[in-house]
Length: 115
Image (tube, rainbow, N blue to C red; front, top):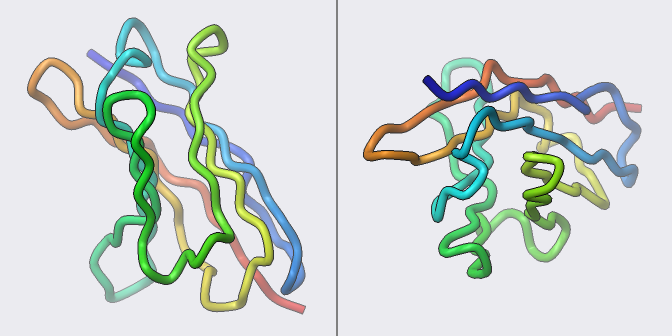
């Protein structure tokens, strides 16, 4: 069983930054497909960023160069650096790992962008 524990969310003013962390249990940190999603009430989860084959990064169109996904295998942690945050980035953010043919999700961390 893989456990994912997110942290780093909070309240930030527009234009500010946050760095989300997702600690991954066991060997799943070596996954070739790790991602961050977000969800707002009444809407489906949408892809924010994905890290494929340890080096290929893709982002949702709305990111426009503001976010960076990365991984530290020694710390068993997946990160999402978010800069120049906007009110429309307010959501619950989830990390997702694909490992041994199964998909695992974290519990989510709330990000609120407001003045």
